[in-house]
Image 1 (cartoon, rainbow, N blue to C red):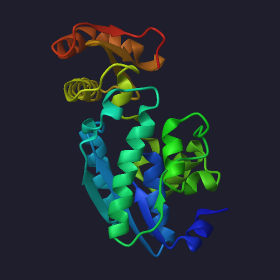
Image 2: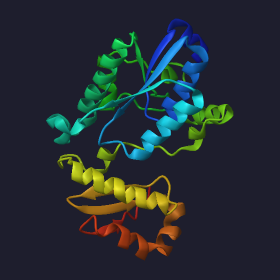
Image 3: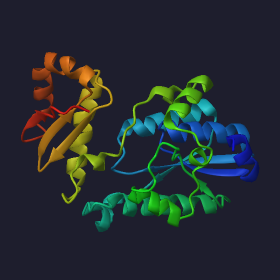
Image 4: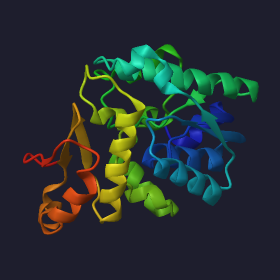
Length: 247
């Protein structure tokens, strides 16, 4: 099935929008094939500010309607306790908000950017989407991440080569409580590394200690500015170390 065929059956498209590669391409397709569409971005403490900036930019580029929903994800104990299925509870809350708002706007079905490369069998978040009857057109049409990047490039979307970026909560190990302070420190640290020119990295924390993960190709760059990085991050964490396994 092609996306054009999918949207023949779903003329009105309410899209859970993150500003990432997949949801950006889905919004592009909806603008092209659906009769009516709207993107819904849920702003929480788990998303860094640059994700919202990218979402706003993409919506502007596509002349697509974008609605921002503010949500205090840290008010849900099932989320902040950070169990191994935290994503299930988080998705329940986030998509519940989107569904409520979209229904108010006259949409009956919610679409998300899950693609054919995603392993749906072992992801708690996918279980929540299934229970909420969220449809994943990219997956249904057999589009892999590589295919979506290629098609996004052809379409002129700036997101085509955007690195995958999981939410900030994934930087905190399972079982350790998630707090606003921890998330803010992680975001500050990653923003610092972004400004230094690093890409596709992570700053993970364990009980106040930071561990940086960068791709092998960026190790030399990290070594060259090691002192600057330590100076920039040492005020945020007890210690700052490098994961020798790389990313």
